[in-house]
Image (cartoon, rainbow, N blue to C red):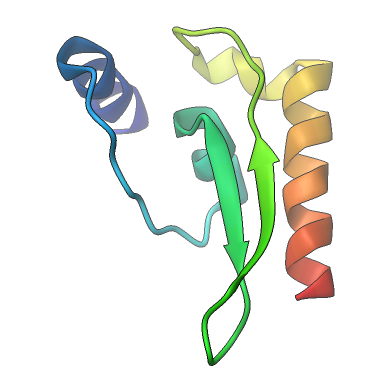
Amino acid sequence: MQLRGQCLLEKHNQTVLMVTHDVTEAVLLSDRVLVMSRRPGQILANIPVNIRRPRQPDDIFMPEFVDTARAVRFAIQMA
């Protein structure tokens, strides 16, 4: 499903707002990840995803992917 969504995004070149609790999914599909606070919802972190496209499932093992996912998880813990 993630790869299909990625293909649709690349084909139509549109901006999409996706809400997920899955850090891996967020990093795999996004150009940036926003971490929000609890109520009232505010943006606490804006983390760029600087990983080449198109992305593949094996990219989750790349150091850049691991570092970005770690930064997202840290921001969530601090929220």
